[in-house]
Length: 288
Ligand code: G4P
Image (cartoon, rainbow, N blue to C red; front, side, top):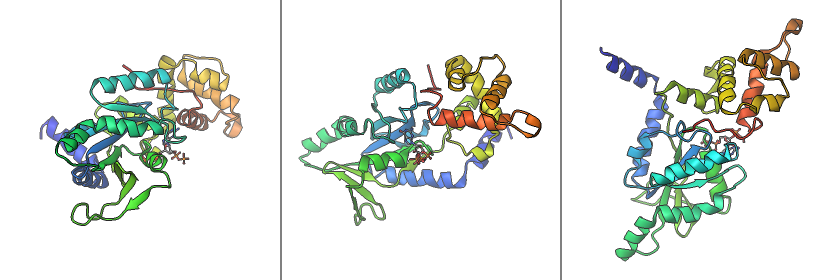
């Protein structure tokens, strides 16, 4: 077996079975829709983007949502929005949790689907609703977005015999129907740093990670990118040594083991939670 085969084999073995099934399902679902609404984590728009989506969604209208934009650096939100616009996508910055940006979605859908709408018009088809599907990696905010956008007022349509058997559509307005189950894409880990950024941001199950080691590396990363984030959050003096930073956070937060030794594992968890909830400030990890 050559190296390439080994790599492929381990990738296949690693690839979780339910994800293979999810991809198969998505390939079927995508046939039914006009518009792919791709949700990315604004803190890591490239790392949270599964490149397979371009193949899956080819010939479909495309809308990218930079979700969790409240947690990301606003300067970078604008740069990433521009980056994807230049590549031809329609882009909206959103915070699905408090619904910022949600009002802009309808216009964005029309813009992304203008060719389809025009095609329909030329063929004399009137008012055929746009059918959309939300896709993204786990935890990126697909359900939160669907709830924020569809709200409670929407009506769920039942099966459409012969066309969309077994599918539930959320009729959002006259012009738009959303498939109510989002497409789950598994992140790609070809590059170590991608896996790392996804892990710190909460897209990979924490149970399989060594949190303290991860936060140790995260502190080093933050020192390069946001040098004041940790020191100002915890009111500690800076140090070039990430372990020393962990010790200092443990000290100011009263994280102690038996014999008054600093509990750096607990300090690491505090830092991780604070990053994920935005308490370390608005941070973007993917930059260019
Ligand atoms: P998924 O369907 O793609 O798997 O993701 P889901 O909607 O379950 O969202 C995952 C987590 O991300 C949730 O947090 C959700 O509240 C949070 N989230 C989604 N969109 C945004 C956003 O725009 N901004 C912020 N700050 N958070 C967002 P959780 O901790 O798992 O749940 P909860 O405690 O918030 O309910």
